Amino acid sequence: MSSTLSAAVVAGLKDKILAGDLAPGSKLPSESELVEEYAVSRTVVREAVTRLRAEGLVETQHGRGSFVLTVPEASSFSVEASAIRTHADVMAMLDFRIGVESEAAALAATHHTEVDVAPIEEALSGFTRAGHEGAVEADFAFHLAIARATGNRFYVDLLGSLGPMMIMLPRTRLGEAYSMTDATHVERVQREHDNVAAAVLAGDPDTARAAMRLHLGNTRRRVT
Amino acid sequence: MSSTLSAAVVAGLKDKILAGDLAPGSKLPSESELVEEYAVSRTVVREAVTRLRAEGLVETQHGRGSFVLTVPEASSFSVEASAIRTHADVMAMLDFRIGVESEAAALAATHHTEVDVAPIEEALSGFTRAGHEGAVEADFAFHLAIARATGNRFYVDLLGSLGPMMIMLPRTRLGEAYSMTDATHVERVQREHDNVAAAVLAGDPDTARAAMRLHLGNTRRRVT
DNA sequence: GTTGCACACTCATCATACAAGTTCGCGCTG
DNA sequence: CAGCGCGAACTTGTATGATGAGTGTGCAAC
Image 1 (cartoon, rainbow over the protein chains, first blue to last red):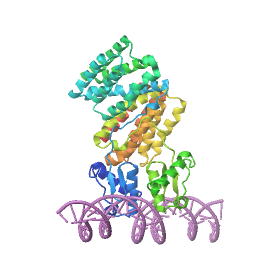
Image 2: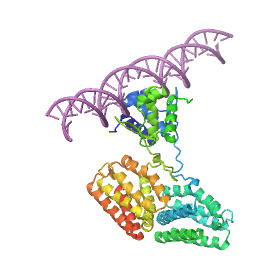
Image 3: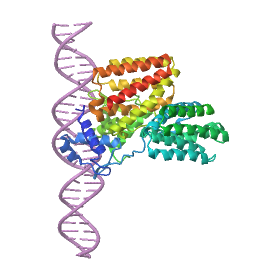
Image 4: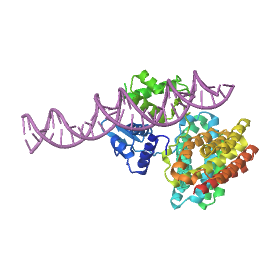
């Protein structure tokens, strides 16, 4: 049992909402109905509904009732671009990506399916096609394609939420250091991407991990 | 004026909390005092306090009163606990943590300083002290201590944002499967933690990485 | 000095009542 | 018959009083 009655009612209603018994947009039972259903006083019912409202699960209209809201299942993670200020932050972010993405590459090597192949190859060719303008976006698209190939939505969500930041910041903060203007630079990045993609598509997790680590490690050195 | 009275009381109390008039740890006025102060009924006061509690601003203890909590500092990442539904999600989350945390352990091995040692050892002993109740929290505290030792705030933020979810979900969704009731289970987890901590504190990144991977891999198997 | 207990204070819950907003149908009017 | 008004019924919002249960305190007995 719960420590409080209202907590029990909250749990019960939450289950029904998350299980789909109470679809988004549908009306919750009225307070008096809930009183009967859970055999508690109206005080408890009102407290429970208040908590659901505070969590953004329902919305109450005076004189009409409470209605289930559509929970925006956008992404599990969200980043604030303003969270990155200093050069050290960018370095730390790259260290962070090394850990996350090298493992993602290894997972992608073992978990990818046929449907993942085309996006990866598309991202590769898109990088060569992209001029100086869209190079960073194309770079990121490749990394995102690898993340998708893991079949693990957390990698996709995390990288997806990192994306806008990675695209915005190198330009504004680092100036020319990270700019993709150098042709030889672009070519080297492309070769590194090729190595990662080859290992992933070959199903070789250790090589894929090493290739991604090498790629991001090189990027880190270039920015430093 | 607000549309409802309770909203006005919520706004008033929130102002005082955020302005520092009600410092973290201090006690809120009792319900009867708030009734006088805002000239509303207990019903309204209770609803207002309920909403503050749902927002994580205060905590209420039966028979003592409500107390202001330390406002959670904004982190770069945020997770919605409702984003995890199915058993497969929990599996994917563990795969995700394997990638992130094994690298964090390696980074911690090379980057940790003297100030990081005490929290790690404290978390270790805290896990043995914790009964069946706080085992999950203590487990998580250890992982967070490792993340801090990396000196990379992104690892700390990410793990910190994952924390509440990891603590909440195994209980509700997985039932007994992940519960820490088994004594031998607890002992094994503790030994794995010891291995991770030893490698980190010894400054051996490869061993630390392997130990953390082993630990989370084992956890994954236990939950499956 | 320590122990034990009564008492005051707190939140949790219940029951009841009334106020205020919404919906719906019924009857009246044209 | 069409349209309008109006009230009955239902909803949430607020008020009030009472009781139960957990916590802390001070005083009295030992």
